[in-house]
Length: 229
Length: 97
Length: 152
Picture 1 (cartoon, each protein chain N blue to C red):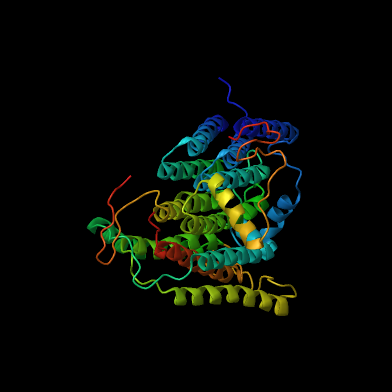
Picture 2: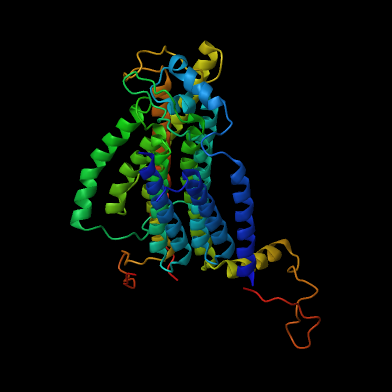
């Protein structure tokens, strides 16, 4: 009975959404701000990747809020799981192939993650994508050898420093540029690595923060003891 | 030129919706997590067709990579995917599923 | 055969994913399946948000070798969806930690059982009686007015 009512509700919602979407033009949405940003961004910000100039220039405050959400979720998850008991059970070590592959993958993932973070203003990429790859880089060896000691303290220090760096750069923008998180340091030549002012620095801070946060959260989950019942 | 984009989009949407229905219908939870990553990959293909390489990269890395790892790890801890674990001297029941 | 309309396909995909996600949340009885349905719902919502930025015949908003493309798609929805995806995975990880704690405290992941035991625990903590309805059938012996409708 409950299932049929839910199906009816979902069907009604689908009908409502389809009627609304019939009124929308796909491909001719009436928003003008995107076109204005596309015209102005190459001269104003100087980054070859216009999405980066939106994420870290025009809507940098939203990125700061997003970092706050990530911090809250990771901290709450860590609090929820509690500290690992000394002498707790853990999974057995993985086989030879997995251990060797994890050892080989760690430097590769580190390099790829840092490359994507640092080139975020030139090619598709940036702090979030590179940060996720960095988190995977630190977590894969933990999957291959469960029970190895994961230094939560140093990762927490990196996360805190990276978040503070983002805010400090923003405060410099407030003092020297007139607005919080205003891009500074000149624009440089578009397409080269040292272009777009403080945007690569902001993305490096974002990447390190996201990477260390997600790695710490996953290490907490991995160290959590399974309850056998 | 524009024609094959429509067909690729249709294929990606069909794969995505089939994966989504499979998440609801599969009994094995590990298979349901794999179906979720199939949905993420279909969404990443659609993002590429919508001329958004940044978003496609993020969706592929996060949805098909990190999210599946987190879900699979939590399934292990929840006991929905058992492997024998190592304790100090106590033998656990073996069993894979 | 003429190709189907791109807008119709993509809107169907996004709405279908949202519908399946909502259906999964409402129907499922296992907590992990509810979490997976929330993941589907988030993916569908991100896809729907991205659809608003597309311009036919336009290029990606990236300047290659100093050549600015004539028409570019809207970069603002892309920037918003970028952060939304990463927020989504952080919230998923937090949801799974909640599920882990529920499992270790209550030992079950069935939401019907969880709901009953949570209500009982909360009523016990607050010192009040369980919330019951006047139409509920009397458990022991002769009942009052019996309620219609089964439970699924």
